[in-house]
Image (cartoon, rainbow, N blue to C red; front, side, top):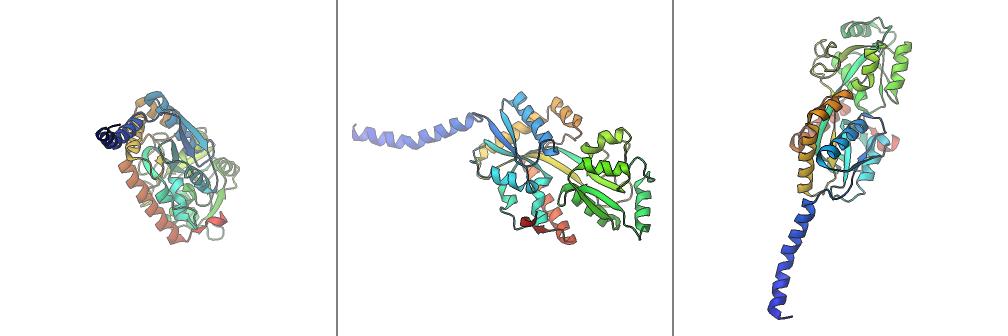
Length: 329
């Protein structure tokens, strides 16, 4: 080959590489996208992630495959996701529970804050404060008055496992109300419901979607929701703030995260597509039909929310001495 021809060919190589890269990125997604859910099937994160995957398939032609990898408060699933290539073909379905180990555990095997990249929020939900149907308390004010007077036997408050969102909501509730209750950990809301109905537990705090059918059916009595506004699902139930509990706005949020190192153009495309898909009226209806609120945020606002929540719950955990070593989970 003539020397001048060789020089021209070599000079063209970087441009060809750029074009190939741009073409590859423009084709994204060119195959199935794995979404690792670090919590069990049927959990709030799992339900909402599956609705999101369906929306992305129906409206944006993605093929999202949900893979549950539960254990150690979500840490096992995160470890698994981080073994995958950061090319946009492995995402994480997560939420408030995903970042809580930062606040409640030491000696974590990773820096969670640096291991997840917020893509988009798709939903949130309140916790609800409930008592059994035979409880003598018909309002949160009544219950708090009785709890403060019960010096011989502290009231028992059931919530999900230690370090979970409902547990932290319970600790914040006691702090804000000046009550000293006995926190009773449960594996999930179903066990809490049994003890509330049987009278073995004074009150429970857990996710509204887990309790709403039992509340509507009359087996449980809702005293307050923990969000700043009343829930669409229980419009007659007041907020804790309305009941006199100040500075107690607690909601759990859910969304999609990417892996660090994922190309920015892929993250931007994902964020835009998720926001568009989950803002569609039919998908908002699906989210709300499952007991959640359809709250959609793009990557910038979702990143701000994630960071502010890490700071908020880390401060609480340190204040009440809630931290434990990861090896003791």
